[in-house]
Amino acid sequence: MIRPIVMYPDPGLGEMCTPVLDVAEVADLIADMFETMYAAPGRGLAAPQVGVLKRVFVMDAGWKTGDKTPVVMINPEILSRSTELQVNEEGCLSIPDTPRRVARPARVEVMWLDETGMQRRGAFDGFEAACICHENDHLDGILILDHEAAA
Image (cartoon, rainbow, N blue to C red; front, side, top):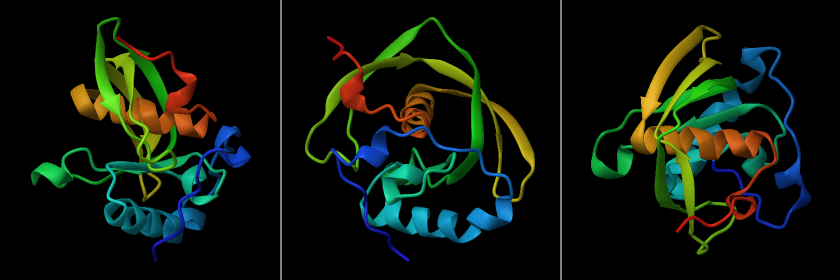
């Protein structure tokens, strides 16, 4: 089911999300988030963007270029961030038509639960790292507008 996307300046977008305690409780939410993200069309979507203040996001960094690799991150924790930065023009489904240049780590290491409840750990670089940081920011109530615009 495609859910309505919460739009800025909705105050829920600035809220800190709570951890997911039972992965089964967010199964329908995850399916809806993927359907909503692909229809939008976006490359990532966090639960607060559909009005659910839980620590879960979905992403598929490469689907628009034919490399469909959907990822679900529940209760993600960024363990490390490279000191090397990348600057990308980021869009946000909750702030349409307002791209912003944001500096993000070029590489991140993350620990999370997948949709089956299995703990995962992985390193991501490039656009995937930026996408993870962007979506994880949503879980902490941070928007691209909260970042100083990068040159």
